Length: 92
Image (tube, rainbow, N blue to C red; front, top):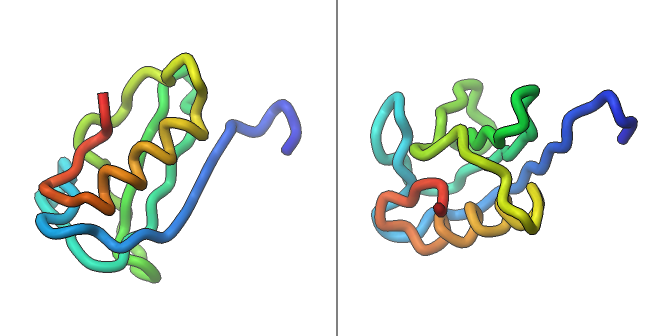
């Protein structure tokens, strides 16, 4: 990664019961792809999609501040929240 590219993490996860809450379509469930990226304004954006689908949705609570322990830690916390389910949102 070069310094002019924003930091970005992407992983697949299976949502727990109750899925993940999105701004656009409400709760989505099943096998999801989660992308967490540094935004130009210094915040983090978190998007989710059904794995292998074309449409991306904003995970409720995004954008959010990058925590002191960094973007990777935020991404891992998001994955954990989605695995738990219950209409998961960006942890904060």
